[in-house]
Length: 465
Image 1 (cartoon, helix red, strand yellow):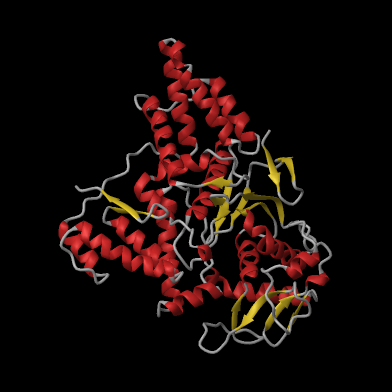
Image 2: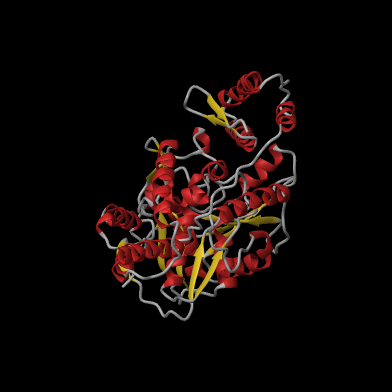
């Protein structure tokens, strides 16, 4: 029996559902900047989850949203002097490329917030009709005092919320913890018309409205990173129960742990955010999937280049072990072991440990048993979404390299000279905490085969092909 940790009850629960139709909603990205390793982890661990449910013959309806209007998107687009739609479309493509290269199953529906404005407005009106929201000078807000179970999902206390940094300080709210449903637009900001005034949806209301419109009043699984538990999912739950008080809204809340760098959560403000596509390009989708597989999905996962290199080496052993066979569920003992680990709250690291125990003991097996072990391992890893495809090698001409450096105002006589000048420019951006520009420079360099190693005295290397 499949057991999963439900964040709402904070306990391991048996999944008791009909297999006929299971509704899964995964909180997708806010598309203001390129995907980082943390986005990759959330996408991959819940891809494992979706694939395993399908293996168990659940009929899945899978929705993953795109937040394409939000304060950060507006600010980023203004910094780049482009329309917010253009930024959102560019970044959305980066995310979709990453999902595809990681071999994640596409959702059945991938709604954008801006495509559901009418549904969002109707949802807000329903909350107001239930007398659980109010209109002020700056927007329409949810009245958290009207919802008795507020903070039950996150387990926080009200004084923690009020003193926290995630609550918007707006003078015309009834209480500091109240959150915006519809934000009135300031001069020059994008907006949509509403009965309350020109504005745009709040972050939280988007998901509730899209879930309701696409999947209905109740869903089975709501998934996302554990940094979304508060305030995003807490507020989603509150407003959804306000609009539909007789419905459960979500049966099981599932959350993955964060990616850490040297014990610190990844953060753009700290300049330690790592672009996902850089590492997919360098290591390939299968190695990245294997790296994510090695940690239990709810636990924090440490990240470093050394761990990726180790994952590449370790996964190569599996690839070499199964390379000569076709996938087949021949070894029932191994299949049962796989199911036992996955049924235990998707305990993928335990399964990986068992896999290498089997591989290490393979020398004692006869030819048939060895063949059954290999074909079953390949079968299981394909269930988990591994392609066993070799990453392609991109070749870049010297003329392309010259054009690349000239784009940054760097004259070219040799790669060594040009990179020294390039790194001076990039380090200036990093010193001024303009990390996104510096990260973009690193990504651009990787596209021509030059790998910049931050944290290693500005080391760099390239594959001269």
